[in-house]
Length: 170
Image 1 (cartoon, rainbow, N blue to C red):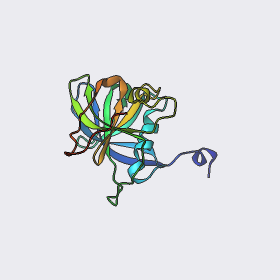
Image 2: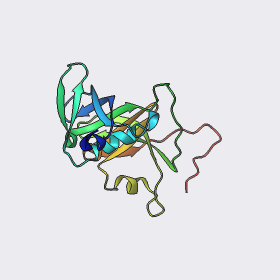
Image 3: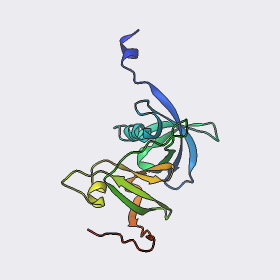
């Protein structure tokens, strides 16, 4: 085994839905490290997006073409949370906020902002103001990895409580 092949990180092909600025969503295959199997695969996608390179290779599933995606032009990447066996791992977060993401092109996506903040910044704004360029928006069995620069606003969605229960404001 050569020294260069010993240093290579194994990559996994992953089909996702991707939306670029000024374009409709499309199905593509991207290649990510194989560190987090199943429903935690979003961590591998985040790691690929947060690398220093400005472009990432992808294969358009419908057209069969290879494209180089400018990561700064991404609105979002969506992937299924379930593993190949259909199992969604339960992950615990300290904060859960139902929101609607409003993008620069006028499109909107509802979901939940789930996060576990450090003791020094417990608000959603503290979470979004972190230096990472992307954040996760959880939508049922899908997770959207959102480019913060494509986001115009994040609007809190009021969830109606069953009668007799209060929301319990802090």
